[in-house]
Image (cartoon, rainbow, N blue to C red):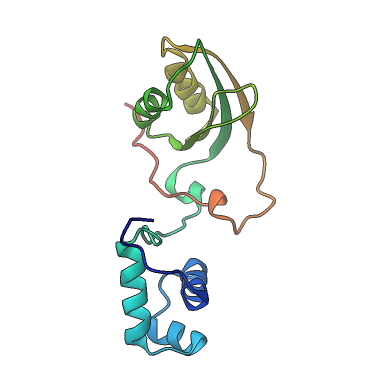
Length: 164
């Protein structure tokens, strides 16, 4: 949170929970659930946006509807110490990488990749491997989601247009 952050209380927590369940819920409905007016809920949401507690509102979409039919997690192993800043630059150049993080353990980073099909995934993997500091990768293809309602099961960006 920013230096100008205000206290985060139980009402804020209830408001955030309601928004996480359905970000399109009106402030009036949320207010009725938590015992505040719509205006008071709006003020709190505005404050939470200003202080960085609420960072945005998104739609969760079935990935296959957008052309993402293949999904995998890729462990990345680097030569030497690759700084997170450099890894972040690399992953931003690949629209198929929907999430990336540095991790503890043997791998240096973990990538969440969505692709049109296995051939497209293989092409993405080869592009990732061309980075000079990447020593090796280990991939895990997703077969099914055990928690299909989780945000990870949805997509947050459209698939890239097919190459011609």
